[in-house]
Each structure stands twice: as structure tokens, then as C-alpha cells.
Image 1: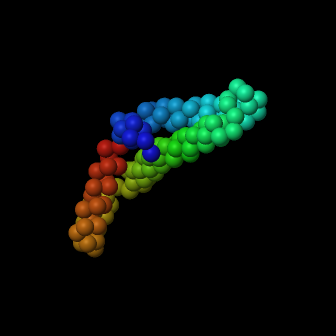
Image 2: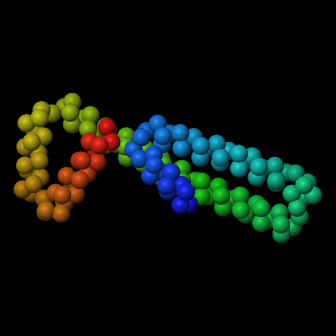
Image 3: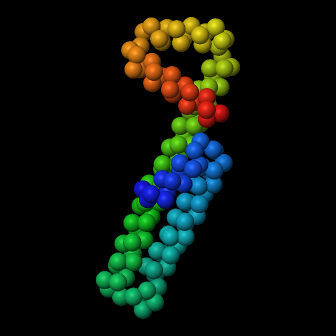
Length: 131
């Protein structure tokens, strides 16, 4: 992934609207690139160069499409994780009492190794911060 994309993804954080907008931008760029690639394939050779020059342009466009696909997948994965977190949080708040949540934490603290419990606490904090 490009460094600019990584910075943009970090700037979006866990804002669903920003991530959706980024996904739309990536999709629009992919559509535009596919259209250009289609024209390049169907136009006469003289308008886009010949031989090696033409093949280099096609290869660069296909590489760019590949990068855009990777970037889209990264955004989709983040949105998916956020959706699963929200779903789990809704299920927990709607189906169980607060006493159950406290008992669950106490049981987890006793049964899980320290590293795993700390990781679980960290993950819970992430879920709460993404609301």
C-alpha cells in the first residue's frame, strides 16, 4: 500500500462516514482506470503508442488497479471489524444484565493468562471507543 493511503486511512480512524467516503473514492478511481484501460485496449495503436510503450502503459494501469484493490480491502476490513464490534456490543448490552458483565470480567481475570486478559481489556477499550 502507498504511504499516502496509509496516512489517509489513519486519518479516517474509526469514523464510518470518512471510511465510506474513502471507499467510494477508491471505487470511483478503479472505475475510471478500468474505463481508460478498456479504451486503451480498443483504440487504434497510434493514439496510445505502439509496442513496448503501449504494454508499459497497460502494465502500469493494471498495477494501479491491483494497489487500489488492496487499499479497498483494507478499508472494507476496517469497516467490517467496526460492524462486528458494534454488533457484539449491542448484543451484550441488550441481552444481559450489568451483573453478568461484571461476573464475566471476574471469571476472565481468574481463568485467562495475564497477557490474554490484558489483550481482552485492550480490545474492549477499542470497542467502546469506536461507538
